[in-house]
Length: 82
Image (tube, rainbow, N blue to C red; front, side, top):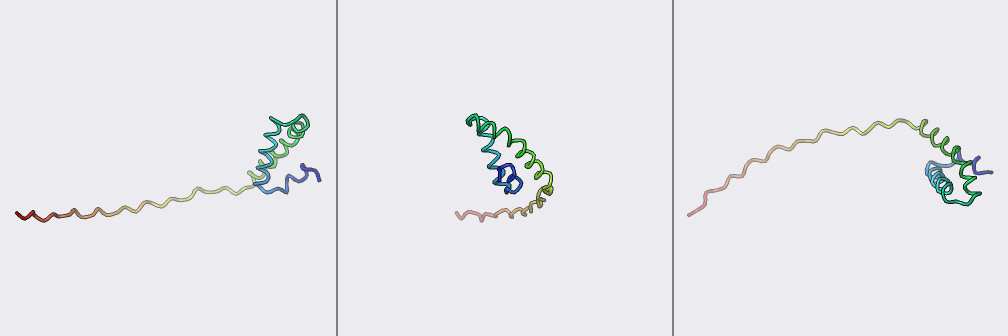
């Protein structure tokens, strides 16, 4: 099975790793690696975009109001003995 046929079956982490590797090979790989990277990049980008569109929208966590502490009563100093 060719790699372009396996893209949809990859986990998000595996797809992210593949994306990083393909991007790296597109810049620094041999001629054959660059050609393969150029062929795979649109497929990977499309799969990433589709997964992002399908992902449920996360609501930001609701922050609870800070509990205000009561002011501590002022310490009363005893008069100094003379």
